[in-house]
Length: 152
Image 1 (tube, helix red, strand yellow):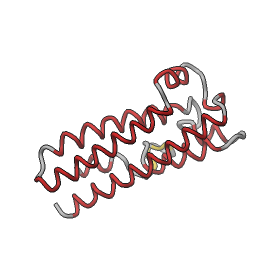
Image 2 (cartoon, helix red, strand yellow):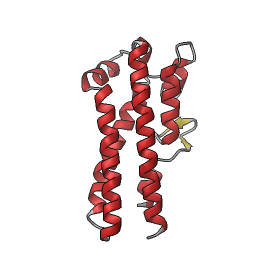
Image 3 (tube, helix red, strand yellow):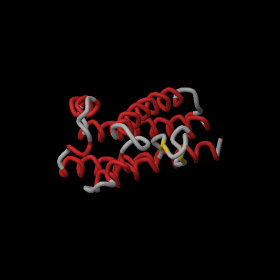
Image 4 (tube, helix red, strand yellow):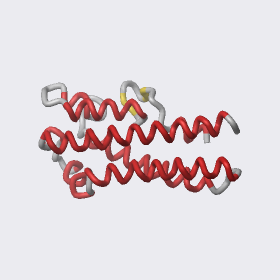
């Protein structure tokens, strides 16, 4: 459980690249709100490439987290099992919020060369708002996980 908890770290890894922890939400949100030359640097994975890599990784990792915590909830004491099921439900809510603003056709189009910069400001604002909600949900999940580990 501690290893899974650390998968969503807020620290930078691999040089200056984020691995979609809570701080990665801030990078993406700040980047989506910008409309200048610094926009790509804030949203892209590292210095080059398409910014959608962060979003697709975030979505994939949240799907994995949802499945992991749901499965682990069945292996714990009843009190901790309820808490882990709540965590799994929070991750399900994260995925729902992202799916609402990032349907597969948008993700696929972006992966095929349709960059963040080409998205209308309104769409970027919708995605940033969804990411803000997701960050809050994930913070709640992280607090529950930390509580379970503290009182193990």
